[in-house]
Length: 119
Length: 112
Image 1 (cartoon, chains in turn brown, red):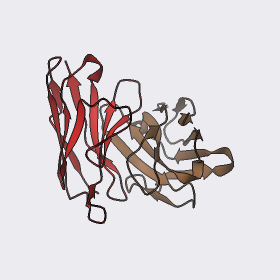
Image 2 (tube, each protein chain N blue to C red):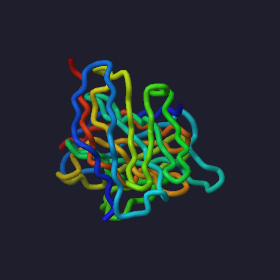
Image 3 (cartoon, rainbow over the protein chains, first blue to last red):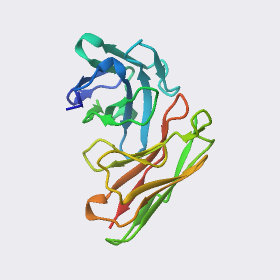
């Protein structure tokens, strides 16, 4: 079945970087964009950016510009998000989500990866 | 970026009663090319990822019960749960996917 499976929980110190993976299965990876969304405690869902898995085009939220990098490995059907210069405000659950061809709502989501930033 | 504002922040509804959630966008999300509104509704339960309920403002995702319905156009949208069930307790988010940045509302917590 169609699914996105993310890597496990991470604990990082302030100033460090984190890289979360999202492995797709059950569909043609390069036919759907992948977005990254996070949910911090007490906050709303926050869109971080997306990657066109077919042509490698990427677009990032201005809030994260310069700190976030989204990549993909088509041979592994996996997308990644890397966030640098972590602070406690980056403590959140990070989700990947699939976006159908032509753009639209996010119809399949990963299970989420908890990232905790603490000294 | 398009700002999405939901109301109310929370609501308590009796079992079997109607729940209505509103969502307002800071600019129109209507694609004139296809006359569709780029507005989605998601349901999120604790410890789970969001689940797509409604897209293009009023199209129900496959498998979603028909007690969930979406309406509205332009900048004002509504999610209605016609007869609340216990399993509908969750946080509901609207999202616009019109712009390059995809923004969410602040969420509405629905309780019994």
